Length: 193
Image 1 (cartoon, rainbow, N blue to C red):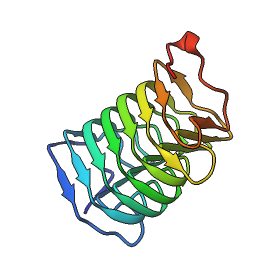
Image 2 (image 1 turned 90 degrees about the vertical axis):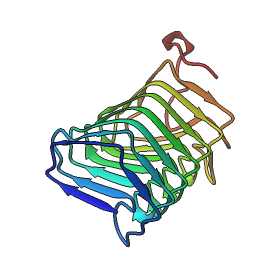
Image 3 (image 1 turned 60 degrees about the horizontal axis):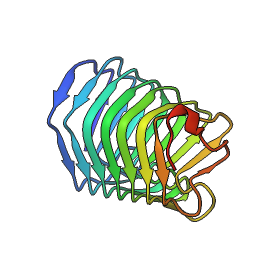
């Protein structure tokens, strides 16, 4: 796959397919990138222990218009693993990814960024089929989470320690439940079930 360290440029139109990493980021691994702009990427059919599709660690990056699909993590973060990170992401489609541990779609560990205008669907994990959030308080705005599954509670979102801020988000048909480790998001904030 692709490895970027301390990168602060812009990459448009990347295609990362059928890569395997023994450790982090099957499709791509970004480390300590302060301001990378990643647009119009397709990341699919990749595999790694952590972050089957991508790992982004320690950055303040911008991700937009990405398809992250059919990736596998043997540990955490089937699609994306955002670790110690403040990146903002919008217009992502995170679909049909798998993690043997937490976060079939996204594993957010010590992540404080924002995910908006995105779809997280059809992902599977042991915990947090759609999103596994640990030591993190991400903002989810206008996100559709549906048809995600987990072997234990937290089919849609599994929150550990700090719950995400959720607004204008739709959660439905997640199995065994929509959220675990946090209160059901309020319909007063525009959320739909």
